Amino acid sequence: MGALEIVNFYLVPGIVVGSIYALGAVGITLVFAILRYAHLAHGDLATLGAFLALGAVTILGVSPYVALPIAMLLTAVISVGIDKTFYAYLRERPKIVTVMASLGVALMVRSLVQVVWGVDSETYSRGIVRPENWFGIRLRDREIVTVLAMVALVLALQVFLKRSKWGKAMRAMSDNPDLALLSGVDNRKVVTLTWLIVGGLCAAAGVFLGLNYELKAMMGWTMLLPMFAAAILGGVGRIEGAVLGGLIVGIAEEMSTLFLPTEYKAATAFAILLLMLLVRPTGLLKGKVL
Amino acid sequence: MSDMLEMRQVVGGYGEADILQGVSLRAGQAEIVAIVGPNGAGKSTAMKAIFGLLNVRGGTIVVDGRDITGLEPNRIVEAGVCYVPQVDNVFREMTVHENLEMGAFLRSGDLSAAYERVYGLFPDLKERRRALAGNLSGGQRQMVAMGRALMLEPKLLLLDEPTAGLSPRYMEQIFQICRDVRDTDVTILLVEQHAKQALAFADRGYVLASGANRHEGTGAELLADREVAAMFLGG
Ligand SMILES: Nc1ncnc2c1ncn2[C@@H]1O[C@H](COP(=O)(O)OP(=O)(O)O)[C@@H](O)[C@H]1O
Ligand SMILES: [Mg+2]
Image (cartoon, rainbow over all chains, first blue to last red; front, side, top):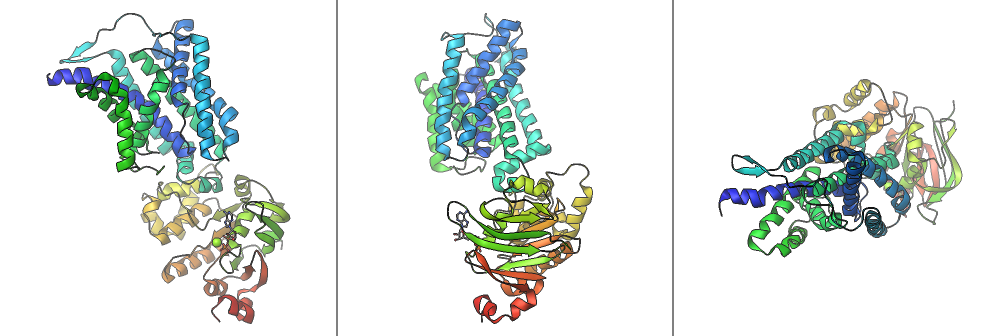
């Protein structure tokens, strides 16, 4: 097999799915950093975002790219609602209680999607998209958009965290929550802001997954493990780390099919996660210790 | 002249148990008041009580004529009180400048005068303004912590063991900065383990033991007190 085939059939799909994992992993790492628990409803929120975009596509007749910001906004608001309804009361309790609650939320969100949209696979648009040839490398528009959108969203987030007053408050809260409180930061506002961002990123991950593959009620849940692997691989609390981790897990999954039967693809993320926890639990870029 | 801080018979603790069994403290305008006492006496706890980080079950805390008992910490910041905890008192993954900026979180408008004032008090920090606070030495980190608290231009500054673990040179520097800050009309309440030096430098002092007042007086009075000397000052 030539280098070009490896790029076309393994590396490009790996980068695309890796970008999707990255969007999810950034959210997971933010929740870890600021709220300090593992959010297991992350995948199903992505599913919800993907189907909300489908709703916009079918009801408004817009393209998936127009539906994307709509779905991001709706999912962001729903995430804040979920936090206020289910997680806010558990803030003072041991974190494991919230982790379990998020598993319950995951099941609820998935059931809701199944009730509204059914259990069959859906797509945003019918028909086969032929990839364009770029000097032998074959890329579809949606693949290019997926990667560019991931980069743009992450850069925007980084600028927000580095430059804006409330972005700095989020970093402060992640760094030293007690001191943030002493500095007059209202932690409830930071939590709300965090969920807005996390919900939006979740929806983006879901929409791009639906755009490149298909929409299914289980799509987000199956993405949960690789997203967590990516967040931990990159270093918990590290945005750049989550992106790096997402890309590595995505590429590793696709590459694994060179050597292993495709059924083992999902196990790749698990293997990376285990290896990382054993060898370097702080992740590639030094993150928080879990 | 009315007091900046008046804490009357405060009873409270972290959970059910009362750590403070009736602590009373007062501090006048632009006064440096030191709290000394053995480990576990409740010195840090008394500060946390002022800052709303404790379940206060009795007594009142009044700052500048306003009852702040039971308010949330961010309301107490708004009332003009800033607090530098004993440990974990900087944002390690933020730069020195960002730490100061977080100190001014509740302020809006132009902060350049506030930065100038803090960098004027701590010239070392100005040089290292882009360094991560976590990479600084202990003494510099303490300066960042104090600088952060001063950004809000508080009326009352609470310092919990600002010189713990610092060399005598840094200790003298921190004390000098406290005097400079006081001279800008700020009241300072500080907890110190270096009892002798702290009492010599403070305007007045309190000795706490087992969550209650034991002695109070001017620094010189306390230093001259036989019992106090026997308790903490090494005979
Ligand atoms: N966060 C806490 N939770 C429960 N008990 C605490 C806490 N912090 C301190 N204590 C207890 O309160 C008492 C007074 O502690 P502290 O105020 O820190 O003493 P110090 O005078 O040395 O500053 C000690 O018995 C200590 O064990
Ligand atoms: Mg103490």
